[in-house]
Image 1 (cartoon, rainbow, N blue to C red):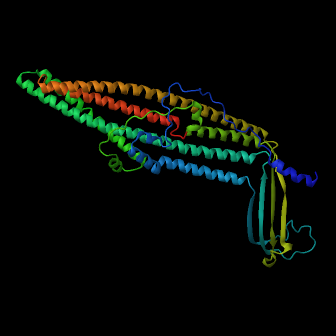
Image 2 (image 1 turned 45 degrees about the horizontal axis):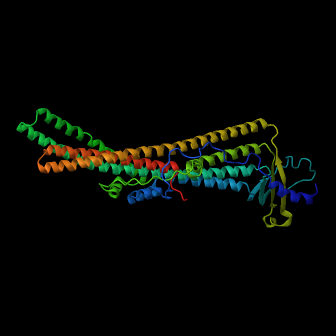
Image 3 (image 1 turned 180 degrees about the vertical axis):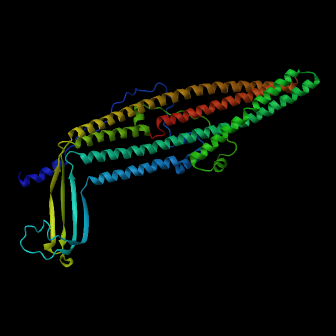
Length: 466
């Protein structure tokens, strides 16, 4: 080939498309719309702000700053970015410099001088060497480009894992905080109910002494008080568990978290549910799905790497330097030496091994595709279940709120009757106990609705801009 024609061909060869199949997002079987949806407003990027509790916002901020789970995910991201940098650097030319000074002694009877008739008196000398070695793989078939593509995809997957860890952490802090506030309020209601039951017991004791009640009524009042008191320690343990869980999630001492949340605090109101959007939006919203797709793309690039291994690999290699037995003449023209030229390698007798590697990487791609498919199905199910649960919990909460309002009306009537002397104090206490019990049920339903709402935010991938 004419040397002048070779120069334009080289860039063309370097620009050849890499062997293997270029990645394209696989079609996933997603429905056109969710079966159960609610709301029309997209949540804020910091979705927990919609819950309207500044203490919760502060706790999530602290968790983001100090959580060991996030620190682990961030460290893995830095590691994969560094590995990507290593791989990208391997696709370019490499140049190394070497220098050497050695004392050498040649054998007079060795093969160097076996056929030389003249004597060689200088057998021992000091050798001075300095030079450069360079190499550059000409990536005709995309071996290095596929390796870089795989490294980039894995870096992006690590970044998505960090985003997913943030989403999970925020949801867990919110859920635990809801449990803590629910526990605090339930303990307050439990204290009020205990005091009412104690008053009922005292009134029953007086009635028994006066002969107005039976011994059986007294035993029943004692049993009611003892049974309810037995439920209080479980509430206290649950509240402590929520507090210690928040301390773990935010990486703070328990006393510090206790000081932030306080001994009492109202449970936040249930805000409207966000819009679910389209099922296809989940592929871009949820970080775990984005990460699974990046793993799939990396697996696809791995197949390209294995295919490229079966093709020839071309490189430009060269070296240049100086070599002399006298330090003073090391940099003279006569001491120069250099070499430059192309080289290639072609696998001939290991095609069976290389074909097996292609099949292995294709199986890895199939496994990544199945993992991605399962993740998509799981995400769709998460959204459906979360919205269904919220709808049912809200229906239950509204029914309990209606029952609480009726119980409040019953108490108002009982108070008026008691003031008029138409009923005994024990009847008024029973009405008050009924309202406290109804308030406890409404509180638990409110907690369930808030927890379901957090599950919706998590299932949808957190907050997003329009």
